[in-house]
Length: 168
Image 1 (cartoon, one colour):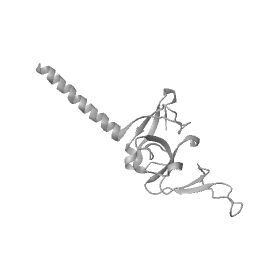
Image 2: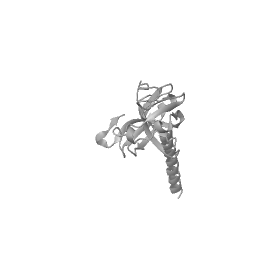
Image 3: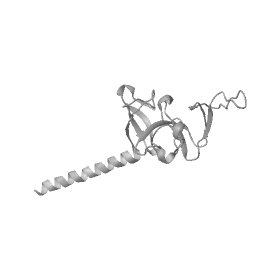
Image 4: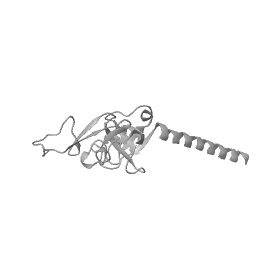
């Protein structure tokens, strides 16, 4: 009888230890993410499984070109997967709501503009994110730069489907 209680106690103790270790790993080291939606096509598709890490985002700012997982600025219960296009201090020039690098407004006369240009600056502590599928992505072009505090993790590689495993 005592050995059964001792065995149950050991099972509960080791289960609690493994649960704590798993929680800490997924919360502070990295985790797995399943993509949903077309905003990152053709780089990532719906139902792709990604391996992400959280350590580098805690010690230094993400770099331009990184794919990140962040809390959605419009719905805090939802996460988004986007690419970093602008870092603090960058000037983002948008032409017809698409990035146009190094282009100024072209005018035929003082009253009529040929193209619709707008300019944004990424302030300190913020980043500019966009989906690779600009036609079907809700990103910084709509809600502006997002705070670095919303960045949850950085994508390391795609794990699924197996035929498309690669570092990102």
